[in-house]
Image 1 (cartoon, one colour):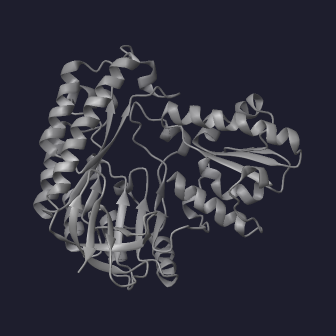
Image 2 (cartoon, one colour):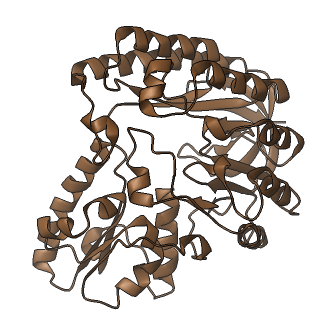
Image 3 (cartoon, one colour):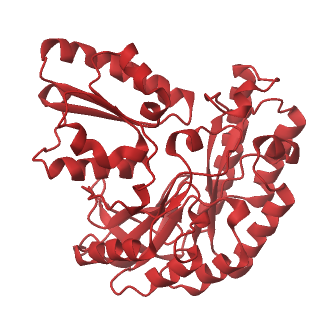
Length: 414
């Protein structure tokens, strides 16, 4: 979502005559689009911001802005800490970047009730795949997550606006769209999320539809049925589990148990036997015991995700978990994260090996650094492959998988 916000900022700036440059020393305007969902990201931002101070000292006309969740979280305090920052713009006000440049400086962190009605242009690097926001904000208040405090309450875009944007993308040559939302399947516009998928499935020229991220509590039979019946909706879902312990899930305020989650996994696999399922896992949540940790490892073994994003628990401002007793030492969190990642690497490699000698449909996105064509399967597996003939980006090709690695596949066109 942050990456797409950056695309939209570039879209707004391009309308004002700005062009991107690779070297900050050549820039008239430097914008840092930030994430605060984990402490490590915040530390990296502060380090980068500190390095920009000397540029401002050399060039008084240089403008520096901070966007995104850290901007929303810190507000005026950010400019007190770093007076050389000219603009502070929260994610709900991303569409005001152009307006901000009309002022010498400013803080734009107001609650924006109109964000779901805004249609903001995007400057996209890819000419094949595109991200499309369908909703903003979050109402779930998971006890570890700062997002509801930085991105505000859930607001859904009108379906007609989403369809119009996708149709315009198809006219520009795009073949695949990924629908974005903090909890995309809780979309509650003028139609339901399954109905929105049906509408997009009817758009001529569109080849594939993906969506992220789904909340297990909002995944029901109707969405699964539409996924299975819609030929353009890909057989892949990102469904964060976070923990295999019911006790920890309750403390996290996730609103489901492991058995309820497992039922939904079964429902997905019954309807789409070849579906790829990926997930998020948090290691070392406050009060997590070795028994809780083992429950997570057991869940990974039983479910066999295609891949996961796993992180150490990180205290975040405003969140209930940050004030909980039982915060774990960093070394314990690191050890548990290492175990989780090691186990999942084995599972992912085993699942990928099963794809050797199969034929996969790949949407070609371009070439990699080795000169091979690269693209993704419908199940979101990266495939690097060779071809005797030239292939244009955006083409759908059949690829015989000849090698399987932990994070990618190799093959050749048929």
